[in-house]
Image (cartoon, rainbow, N blue to C red):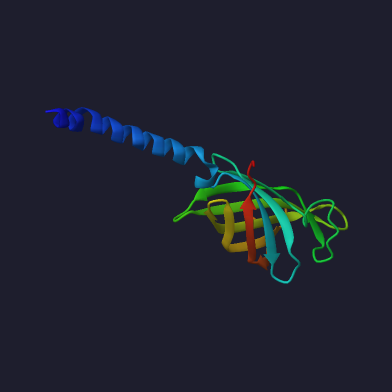
Length: 167
């Protein structure tokens, strides 16, 4: 009789408690989700590598900055400067995230708005590791992001990096 009471009353409660502990452990660790800030090494085709900080915010927004396309850069490979990047992300399949980042692009000589740099990418987040799987980078010419005068394709980039964590 004692074993039946254990099985009927205590066992389901133990299983439920263990499941709750499992769920709390899963949601408490940032390594189980894509949210966080990553420091990346980006390798564009035909240009030198650069460093990038990208933050995937809870709720699906992105903020980004890098060492190449900003107002203080003097990169001889690009005749333009870019603003900080902003965008959105959503979960894909198998630990992937789908990203879109947009930056204002300014003429390097006149500092006038030239258009937008747009990055569409898919990355794999595995623990604290970020690996770009595919990307398409374009400059959209003109003041209207949704109706550009023209498009300058910059091609894909490779990007790998690590989440910044509190030690």
